[in-house]
Every structure is written in C-alpha cells, then in structure tokens.
Image (cartoon, rainbow, N blue to C red):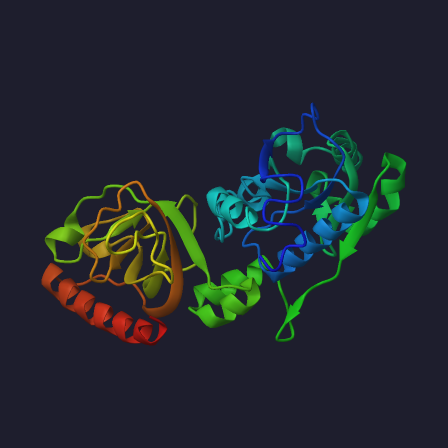
Length: 329
C-alpha cells in the first residue's frame, strides 16, 4: 500500500470497519471515496492524499467504498471480474495507515440518491474533506462528477480534493487496465499497475479429496466473487503457511506451489475454484487464511481425454513451477 504517513492502523488506533450511512457516534474525518477494486497505485495515491489531509486537519482518515461493487449491481448479466473481494480489501487496508473503512451496501436506496442527497449523507458522516479521483462519478446514474462535487461542497461544509490520473509506463492506471493484464496472463505488467504482485486470499476449506487421491493434495480456497480476473495454471507463492517445525510462525517468503484456478472440466467441475498444491508440505491447512501470490502463468485450463492424461500434465506443471520459483527461494 506504499509508505503510510501514519503508523499502521492510523494515528487514532486500529482500522475500524463501519457499515451504513448512520452518523451516530461518527466524529469529523477525511474520506476517500470510490470502489477501490484492486487497491492499485492510483488508489494508493488517493489514500496517501487522504492521510495527509487528515493529518493536517488532525482528524481520522477513512475510506468509503461499496459492497457489492456498483457495476455488479448495474450490470448483473455481465459483471466485471472482481480484483479484490471484501476480505482482501480489508486486509490490504489494515496496513495502509487509514483509521476507518466505511462500507455502504450498494442497493436500490443508495443507487437512486441524487448527487445532493449523497453530499448530505457525507456531511452526516462527519466529512471535513473528501478525496476522489479525477474520473469519479456518483449520484443517480452517475449524474454528479468530481468537478460538480467540488463546486457544491462549500454548501455542505466540507472541501474536495481531486487527485489526477496516475501513470505507469505511460498508461493511466485503472482497475479495468489491471483486469486486462491479468486476463492476458501479463502478471508482471499487472504487478506494476498494482504496486505489488497480484494475490487472492481465502480460508482453506475441505474439498472432495480428489487431488490427494491423485498424488497432488491441494488447499482449496473459495473465490468469494462472481467472476475471477484470471484463469489457468500458475506458479505461485503462498503466504500464511506455518513454517516447518511448527511454532506458529509463517514461512517468511511464502511457500512455493502450483495452482489451478478454474472449473476442473476433466472431472466434471462447474464452479470456479482456486486449488493450490504446496511443494514438499505435509502439515494441516484446513481453516487457515492463506494468501496466494501469482508469480507466472503456465498454461490455460483445458479438458483432458482421461484422468491419467491430466495427472501426467499435472506432473509437468509442477516441474515447470518448481523451476520458475527456484531462483526466488
């Protein structure tokens, strides 16, 4: 998330999760507003501006976002691939230096608010200033622009900071650009846009044990999103895995592994799932929250004529992933 200007957790304490528009008990604050899917370097610029503005005003710094994301509601038949689910955004923001994470349910009531009604809601939340991107829009059907908001804000008792576009390699950083890079398997490009390698996070659940029967036991992580931004077979590093010998400490650089993200068509699967085979690991992972860092895409998922053919390819994938990850150990 970049270098926080406050200590992790913010100068007013640990990051607080707040839901809804109810203003009860809310103190004055500075709010960054947006979807923040991916928390890429453009979003990080907004967050750092918010922290700096809050420090100048000596009030808490917060981020206001939505769940589900607005486009998931507005485009139900073709929602965008989700870069970060709520858990992933929450974990990233815990180290950002922010004090508050406001989550609004993007429902019929919220989507029909006019621009003026939304501004009134921000005043009720205690906003002393808000920070938005240059292309931010809000209000019913996106009628209110960032520039409109800046012109109207004085009537509501707060100020508006508009953050210019952030460029990486000459490209304007946006969540859609990150999605395009991931869909094309361009993980290095995606990492430059994000400011870190792309990763997914989830709690390991018990699966069908098919991988164990085939000699490739896997940790199964539900995606918690309607559409994933990438698919295929990957070399990965897994964070949150207990270090060898126990004691509770996690392996410091992440555990090398090979991962499949897809529906498993050869065995009749239909629901997308992230399955991770950790090399040379024999411990217990059920119930642990893991983060899977995608290092390189090996190939697309495909349907095999037989399970034996699939297993033969799995051995090749594992060997390729080991070779790619060996210099990183």
